[in-house]
Image (cartoon, rainbow, N blue to C red):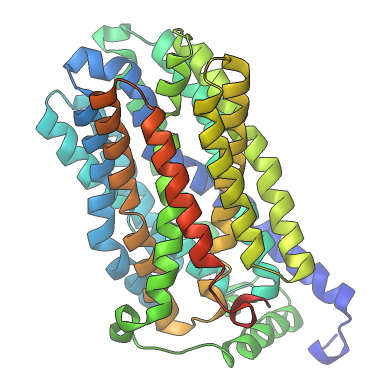
Length: 429
């Protein structure tokens, strides 16, 4: 069968084959990545008191990850584009696993800051690298649902990581003279190293390398990517930071990242503030908002592809998240309603993020896409430094996380307003 004789049903079958080959494995990689990035939020439940860290020290240390991330992300994605995904992603996973495991040896504030910085340096390039990698395989009209599937790794890391981290910290505490948080860092780092070695043998750099596809299937996939690339901007690496659209996209993603990391790093503390003290119970309860986020994320991704509409499918989740964060404070007198509002906030946050990535990838291509995606992600992910620190600082001076939640809600509203200023014809494909 040639590409010219393939029906739409045949084409759908080819893309389904690609999806089953790539997405489950990449999803596992992302769950591991996100878990190792935010498990410091659970470590805080024991680590802060054991080592005498204040909320400001914790917030600053949690955010130092994104300083290291910022400096190496663009170079990392350019290297990936040149040397191939499987080699570079394997390197990223093994190195961050080793650093994450090394977090168990932290004893001082400076060691905490340095190790979080090194973890960001090691992991830089993983997420934008995967987003870039998916543009090698899927055209924009299919990418919304696919990126949503991949990014269910964020809420799934919460679903799996919450109970797992709580169980390790409770059950392994004082085993072999180590604290529960030390065991958590060690045990949750091991999968990164193991799966990192698997990446090299499992992934194909390009469609043309995929021996599990027939020749006609490879031709079809290559043709669809080439057709789309004709309508994209092929800007140079050095022109990326001069491109106004890249900065607009960075501002939008900054607002989403602020809310994501503001909630992710402080969710265990927020639940503890509701009166729950057992580490395992906190872990189990923290899984609920992210489990709801999986359902919401997949629904919004499917709806965006079905209607070929991107802007409102980003804006509506942002409004949901802002509403949820605000209500979590206004309804704080009732623990159940306040927790339900946090669930709504998490649903909105994780639903908006994958659909955001259908915006810049709809007009960037080639080396410009590699640099552009990394630049947007690295600039916006400075929010991961700002958000935990600001929430911690506000909590320390007000003795409450309420002002922090209001701040995150306002930032989301600003991001939604910017999103609506993007011309629909630019991104709705």
